[in-house]
Image (tube, rainbow, N blue to C red; front, side, top):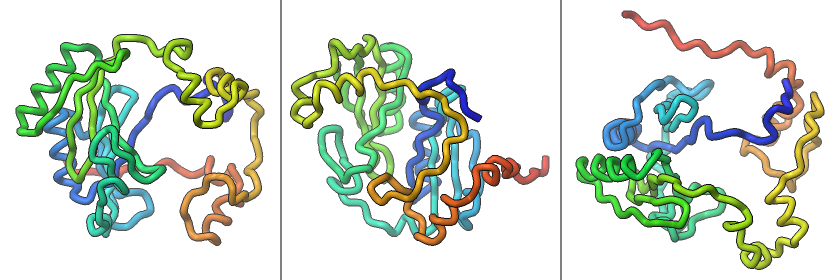
Length: 231
C-alpha cells in the first residue's frame, strides 16, 4: 500500500545495536537509562538469536540483538567503534547515538541518574541548538543525551562552504535542502540487480531469490505471534 501523506519517514521506529552480553546490556539500558523492557523473543528465523525492545516513547524503541558468536568478534576503537564523539570509525558503523529528553531539567535529571549508577557522564555541552551529555555504554558504545532548544533551519545551519568542500554543487545542495516530492506511483517493480547500489549481505543465490519473490508473497505472510505464556 502506497501513501502520499508522508514524503519521508516521520521518526525512528527502533535503533538496533548488537549485544555480545545481552544481560549486561539489558541491565544498563533498563536501570541506568530507565527504558522499560517491552519485548524479548527469538529473532525470527535465526536459531539461538534474540531480539529485545525497550520503550523510549509511544512510537520509538531502542533495540538489542544477540546472535550466537557475536561476543567472539573483537571490537577496535577507531574501526568498529569511535569511543568518543569526534573520533572516526569505519563507514556505515554507528558513530554515536543521542537520546532525546524534553527540556534542560530532564537533562540534568538524567545526568544525576547515570552518575548514581557509577557511570561517568560529561556535560552539558551547548551546541547552539541543543545541549548534550556524553558517556559510554557497555561494549564500547558512545552515547549522548540531548535536549533541543532551537529549531534547526537550513538558512542558518547549512554551511555552504562545507558542502562545497564535499564537491556538492549549488543545485545539488538545493535538492538536499528541499528534496523533490515523490509522486506516489503505486506498485513500483523491483529494480534489476545493480552492483553500484546498496545491497544486503546475503549469499548471492539466496539474495537473487529474495529479490525475485513477488511482493504479494511478502504481503501475504502471516504476522508473527509470540508463544502463549502460562499465567
